[in-house]
Amino acid sequence: MTKPFIIPLLLLINTAYAQSNLELKPGDTIKYSPQSKKPTWISVQSKNANLAVSIFQDGKKIKEQDDSRGINSIERLYYTPEKGKKYEFRIWAKSYLQKSKTAGVSITESRNLPILEDHHTSEKFVEDLHTFRSIREAANSGLYVYRSKQQIDSIYQKAEEEARNCNNIFDFYKVIAKVTGFEGSCHNYTDLPNHASYYFTQKPEYLPITLKNIDGRLLQDSKEVKIPLAAEILSINGIPAKEMIERFATYYFSDGYSMPYKETTGFERGMLDKFYIEFGTHKNYDISYKWNNKVYQVNLPGIELEDFKKLQDSRHSLVADKKLLAEKYSFTKEGENIYRLSVRGFDFATGKEDPPYKKFSVFLDQMMDTLEKEKINNLIIDLRGNTGGTGALYEKVFSYLTQRPFRDSHYAYTKFNEVPMDEKLVITNLFLSNGVTDKTGLNAYLKQLYPKQVQGKYYWGDDKNPSILPNERTFKGQLYLLVDQRVASAASHLASLIKSYTNAIVIGKETVGGYYEHNGHLPLVYELPNTGIQTGFSIVHVIQDAQILADQKRGQGIMPHLKIQQTDQEFLEGTDVYLKKVFEIQKQNKKVQQ
Image (cartoon, rainbow, N blue to C red; front, side, top):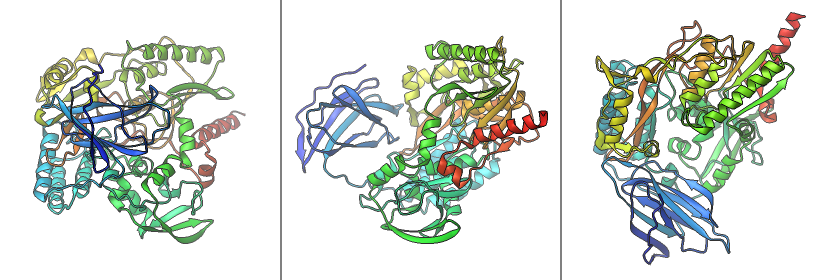
């Protein structure tokens, strides 16, 4: 529902327009017409809700932003109007604390922006750390899956010592991110209330190159900069590449002990914020790199943040990635007697009654028509980049690949069916989109899904975890499964079933999602009262329907039979080394048959 608001007269304060005291209720939207006719910064803030903002030009949406995660956070957009065009901002609550129902909203337009400051004492940091642990102990069923009580006690003891020495919110965020990752779940989440760049300098002090982690080596990932594309970066300001990878990895989380995702993702997703939290901004960057087997030293000046954003958005490796992720699912012929089913996500349908699910089912039937008609004996299942989604979709795919009945899990449980510590609970967009607006609705939902208690655990109802029969038509030829470090949640669950119960040759990288078990299904988010840092985790511990394999240790993601590595030349050329490996196997098999 969009509720129109009458905007009172704006005040001109220090060359900035300001509008405050607007009220926003859950489900409502504020419409706002910007006053400035020139490029300006527009800031939107609420003390009671996490806001999202979209910009419409002549009635068409041109941008949507939700950079910050905290309840008392700010969204900042640089607004550049075109002459003769009509603009409208729409503002709505993505989440709010359980105790908050109506949010006060303020909007300002200004030429310049101040750097956000944080004023917290070490005592407040320690209080938030204690609250953080209390939340995990009360609600997180995965807390002691990979770590013993002694190990958890030990890391919190060290964290408290570090928290007492924290000087700012970044210092504390480093402490709490380390503890979050130690638990071992790719569904864990801990983030600053405001986007980190809002705390940074407005001066040209940002890294003038981009980076890509290729098998433990940092390659320069931008064209038209002073260091050659694909040159190996050895150090930046005296910090070796290996140390950068290790320190950056602490901000990203995986199931169990899996490392590839943690070590690579920061260079793809965290260069705008976490890189500078960890390594700072600098007027100049001393960079050591290797090119054509020679080592070079260069000193480059920092660049503006907006220029670095453009550099990051245009980096070389994105070309291959955008091509790979262009469609949610596709079915293509890759050569003689071989097709590829690519599924990049399971978030395009909410369940079996959703029309996109039915469309996907028709698509899979048509795939089988082609495979049977052409008598195809080789099928690639390509899950690279698939971070998960709806369980019904991955189950549908596997029903075409297996000859045995299967279930989502052997069993699954939570620690509760009435949400604990609800005064700090964040009602997220996930809940709001499903009609859950408070703890009462959430508790009713939990009691429906996890009705029975056995020795302090609340188990998933049997009716929610039925035996799933194979499709009437299933593929019986040779399978090839392509996975990378990004494969998680429902996608890694599917990958574990495929590896466990089919003849698939698994090619790629260890997945971020676990082979035997994971925490998933339902995420909860809480907010720490002093810093506003948000932390979340999926509350359901799932024991997957996967058999024990010799090459799969507990705490690992899905391990490939054949590990992929990429050469510098293949990186430059954008070669798909995964498909290349499949074709090499086929070629070898033909030689053997001859």
